[in-house]
Length: 236
Image: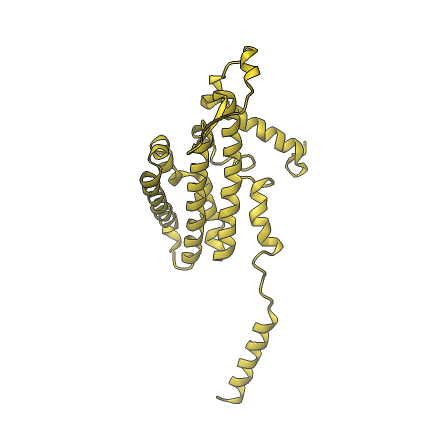
């Protein structure tokens, strides 16, 4: 090895050692997890994924299964797209993204049919529609295509949890006031309204089961969130 080559190699090593490695949970990475919960929530701020929020929030257990399915697809989809981002031709990137999300959704569907057949039957078409969930395709295109695997994984988890808490909150409200109780797998129904309410003449409000009430419930959550979060208040 020549003197110049050795000097160049030493310089590269010094430069490599001088660049600090970003902590796994740096402030920037933590924001990937926390921003989608409130400031940049995919449903209430970006207004994406509304269809599933309206359709499958009749029961809490359905909402929970849907949220776990979306978390699985978004986490592993973001990681796969991130790993492949440098070899995916730009012209066919959307097709590749669809293939990835479709493969993961089929895997989720088969697992649900094998282990939770009753819930899989109730969710049926909605599991398949995860393929067209604009939140997932949006994160693939906007984030995973331009970032490394670890930040993409955190972004997938953050957005999935941000999506999940809205769905579960809407499902809790709809099931309590629509059915008077919440169903838990293996436990049965637990009543949340006291019997005195029913003795006084209260009746379960089946209107809460209908999709329009899901839209109204989501709207109330958006109104409360925007009134509490100063970052979301738009200037006149």
